[in-house]
Length: 360
Image (cartoon, rainbow, N blue to C red; front, side):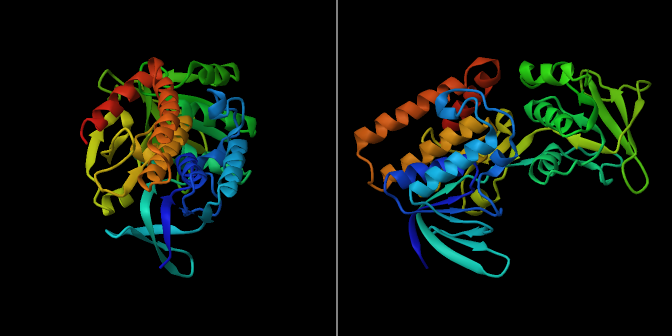
């Protein structure tokens, strides 16, 4: 069984950030991912990112992914794709399965960057073909270059719903409406402005109540909701469509962290149940760190910097960084994270993270 200084599970922004920092510090690093390409969600992001130079502002997501992959290669990171990690053991070993075999290796430190899964809604007809998550539609359009449908309705006006709507429009789809149960748009105004200028109505205070069709989706019934988000009788109307996309939030993928025995905490603003962790991303299990959406649902830029912080922490714990060097480098990253957690969208996440840190 081969031993590495650091094993990183998940090759999205957080996992790549962790692997790069640990590798640059001199650690032997194995990066595992169940997919056939590294980069996670980055390769579905065709829009330009906001933020600072450190967060690759003005660069499209897939180009950021390619840049991080080059940095990982230059840092000597060993990447194993198509490896679905299914077991974590007390000695630091992990077991992963490919299509043909199961392999086991050991890490002195593990960084879990397993990301998030999309939430769904339950309503009559929700299992009809044509009802899918927004991420599935984005994969169809941006990875496989196939339209998921022609006449589409989006549920959810967060950044995911708004961005995927605009990308579906760019791909040639007819997005007939965005439904939002809340009385206000959840995502950034700049994204909402783009879809509105493209002619897509955003129906606030509305939700889907029923999907209609025999073998595939043919249309949906929608209704207004009251202050408790319950459909208001008599407000129903129908919209014909062949695709319904659900952009109703994300939840941390915590199966491996639970398997490893990490203590959990509930945080609604951060997506629900997640591992308790310190500001240095250390969990209740001595040799395991977490980063990215597993540590709480935030932005891709935040995930990247949390991964960097976790990789530095692992390298420091391994004795590969002097205390002063570690503190200087980690302080810069913490300052960037503080900036990302400001303003009307970030302040709530900052308070939620502080609450999680207090549980350590």
